[in-house]
Image 1 (cartoon, rainbow over the protein chains, first blue to last red):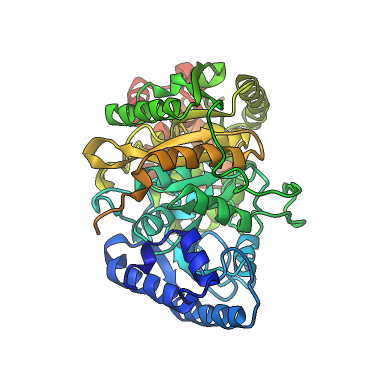
Image 2 (spheres, chains in turn brown, cyan):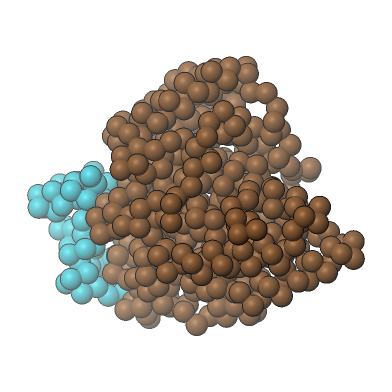
Length: 457
Length: 58
């Protein structure tokens, strides 16, 4: 019973459904795990232990009465503290919102509750999600469970650390330049950035409205697919919300992948660490062994070092009033990042939006005849926290292009690089092609054992 | 018309109603050079700022 927290999300959900375990037992196992290792990781900003146990008891009662609320019924998960939770403070990792208690749930939180999930608490992150190390000046740095001296990526660093260390069965992250996939990669978990618009952003503190995505981190591809199925859904309050009929990220898992084709964006292998290159090349060979066709592709704008000034000005636009009125309440680094967004002129922003359209067309053309594009998720493994305060944005170099195109991207663990730290492999798919990505990712996962590795903490 | 980057940055911040101390400018200038890409600031970038931006990019 003491190892309940190490189950996969799918297995935990099945055991609750079958009556092999109660939601209270699962929740207590996670809370015990959190109590034991949270002092080392600092993954949470707010723990909701009493609420979680009460919700678990309701889940158990409901199930006993024949009311199964969905695929996550009774399963404990955690939420990035960028998402509003009714009656529970939502800080966005900031001093500015340190006392904010929303009166509503974000749509994704509401969807989780409706799907039967138990919310354990609110996860630490990079301040206002604007950074990739989760070295938070106000709530303390999050630590990577594989090496406590290293960062867990970001901005959803608490999500990556909590999932990798089995504090919860899955977690919500958000991704504007890589903030789901970077922590997934450097913490050795699965991260799934969904198609732009598939998951509602209502009630999620914005960073950059045209780039923000919300999605899951989990320990297996199947877990991420099940989690995404609950998060997604049309939301009339979100102007960008999609309404795909019969969406099911899990629908192709287990189907054969022989004959599928992936394109390798070879230009993205430049300037990455040798250990990352080795792990990714081995993964490509594994895909070939599975019968997947692997070929190189060229995407000219990406090959030339795509750089679009969209995130900065959009973030500055959201923050402008606080920048004027409460500049001292930002950390130095985030304030500087936001101020730099003010330096992008209107015509530059508009022209980069136009270039984004051209880039999306290039990617669409490159994907002709392919099921996915493949890149390393990050160019390097996690650096030490003290060494990452400058220059860490290079971690987003391989992830941010896909935030611009809005296509779904799945990052899966593919081995270990320098310092025995985890490395991630990314599959970028077609819009609403999450099921195909999960099919590929699951097949790769089942052919390897990387997803079975866990940090010794 | 401002031509050096520091004056341009200060003027832009002022227009947005945002102030920045000298210490903040030290952090901001290389960040701006990096964010916009050096060609955006072009010949107006001082060599020492360009070097810092290059360092930042590593």
